Amino acid sequence: MLASNSSGKSTGSGRKEAAVKDWVRIPDKTKVQYRLEDHRGAVDGLTEMVTGVKRNPDGRTQYRIDVGQPQRLLAAEEDLVILLDDQGLIMMEKESAVYRQGITERLRGAIPGGSLLSCDGRDGECPRTGSVNMVRSGGSMTEQAEIELRRHALKSLLSARKRRLGESLDQRIRRAGKQGIWGSLSRAECRDLHRQEIAHLRVQLKDLHLESALARRELIKLKRAMRRAERARAA
Image (cartoon, rainbow, N blue to C red; front, side, top):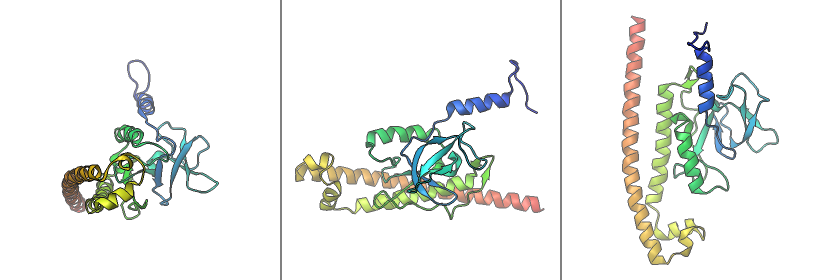
């Protein structure tokens, strides 16, 4: 039975309304991965013609996901992982980095960290979630699953940054092509910009190594606590 507040409105209903009000939906064209079957595609709107029992936080809809087939995949938000490129930004076709940066920051504040998964960015390959324990409790991922997903994401980012760190000036110019600022710079200016990028990459690598070590320690600590709890229950 739900308790009521002084206005006579149930607190359960109030919490649900607050959740719907705070919900930030994943924008159309955002690339996502379906946790249950490992499909990847792009968000193609919402629908109330749902399948299964799961719903988005609004309690009515599911996302339509374009996976390259005539029929759209239907999925609730909790079963989706948002894919990030090698710059840590959401992946959306034909959208600028500035726009994707703003959307990424908005989603990071509204969606659990485990629902953001980093990709290589060079060939589109992403760490698979199949090897991760995806046990859920109360509709959200367990702490262990969140930490493991974060470790996968950090590992992917570290790999991408290391490749960029070993990239020569000529390789960087070829990768940039004629798009963006690189196409309008002299070789000397490209060299200066490349040195700045390398310096920035070294700082990023140092930070990522630290985050990876912290995540590893968190996971070890959590697993020890889980084993102690299991022994206590068995005793």
